[in-house]
Image 1: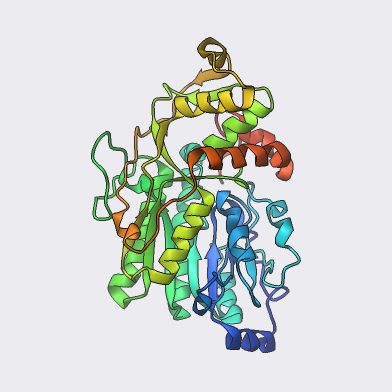
Image 2 (image 1 turned 30 degrees about the vertical axis):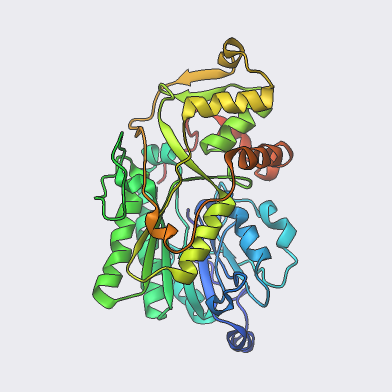
Length: 384
């Protein structure tokens, strides 16, 4: 999403003395995440050579908290606060020495360039994006601006700063839907919605820097991520929160569309694997064989939260609404390539979903506008 254009990082940036001192300790990684954060730096356990990383306080990968807690030493963070971000998600690490808040916007080229100059970043993980598919249908121009233009600004600045690795976090949706064929990294991109189209276009800019300059870029394409800290506009936290507020799950269309779900900590481990072992110029699918339909998901959450297994009673907690303009049936992916680097998902569905349900029971109001996310379709005004 967008930040406050024109905000310079001087107030939060370290002094030249501090920057020099930190570079003697380890190299810096910049990570920006979707739904509100731009970047933060961390050193993953056992990979001190990676240096600092940049992240955000918005989504399930707001287990960026997990990364920051695993990061010893002197690091920092740069966050952009969009509607779906909440600093409450990071209160438990706010006093840590390796946490630092800088508010900015990746679409502000002057800000981004200054950030690279002052923070001396060595590695970039680029998660920052508008990501809600439903919203992309009504705010397509904003998705294009943030996801494509913002990525171009960031990769250009990173290239100029001669970073050592640039990881662009994309999505399985760039492949388009498939009923039977599994996508591998060489499958053509055939996106069917504005969100996926913007991510596919941004991939092209990142790849062009590899092709032209051998800029050390890596692209990842992930299945759906779920877990604590995710803004409740996404299907799992939305259904959980609706049921916990005694409201019905809103099913788009038939609900027979299936999705593959990965728990946030597993995806964090995948990014750490790519950080350490991923080869420049390569693409890595981050997928799972765990798959269920949206309707099945709703019924499973109803069983867990409303404690009923009666089919007729479960139906009373389901509300069928109009479908999206396009709604792909499946996104099956092959992930042998990243598995060859040693990564595999570890968290079983029953364990991950229980942790997620428990978290939203206590933390739904981490966002001031959380109730708006529970409507069947976005209620935000168009982007101007």
